[in-house]
Image 1 (cartoon, rainbow, N blue to C red):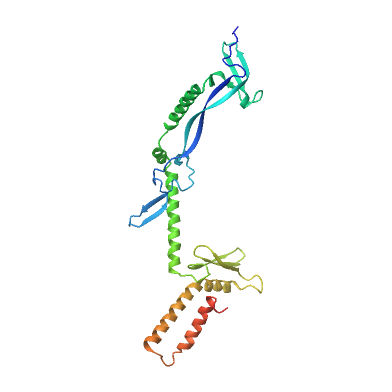
Image 2 (cartoon, rainbow, N blue to C red):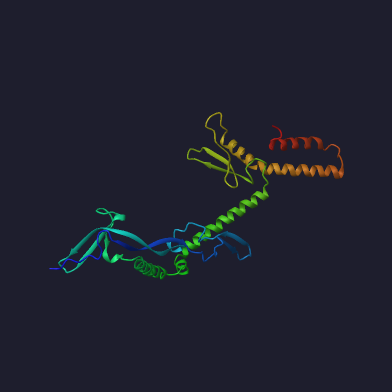
Length: 288
């Protein structure tokens, strides 16, 4: 018969437990060197600043992650509240403890080999455990190798960043090319037309960056325009910003001609300038 083991600690004794805490950290990005930006250069020499596809975007490739774990030793002071011993038929024996701080009767159970009589002993054991875990974790493939294995997801993120930059660049150029009227949606306006199975036409006008200007449908009742009329309305509305800029340019040219060459008989400068100025004023809210 296997003899009952003798406990090393008694109820009321103070013991120390070795602990190894895990903490998540973010590694420095090896691609942008912590700047969060890339500078991409096209074969033609055009340079583009874009967000780093690795650390500035949500990458679902686990091997692209810059998250890492570190392990830190600490000790925990406990008071023995219950002692139990066990002798098995196979000759093995166990001594287990429950502690006041973590629950007696219902709480954590500690094997004797995990508890230490002094804090320095527990600290040494915790440091050894953390060092072993950290060495095992750090032995994984380095970030550069992980990146190579995940190249598809990596360059997919980079491509997305370039597309977003190209879109923003195009929108910026359209804003410059089509100056906006104060208070109106900026840039060029575009019309779109669609027809359903019943032949009913719907149309809308949007700014180049997707802001809805107006929309409508073909004839549903006497209060709606016909399909052709609705399309013509959309076409005119979409052209409004360009027409306004052309009218302003024409007024400037007219005034220059009058200044340089004086009044020309029968041309009707005053009438043209007055009607054009009134239309511009109405478009910009001055005629309200």
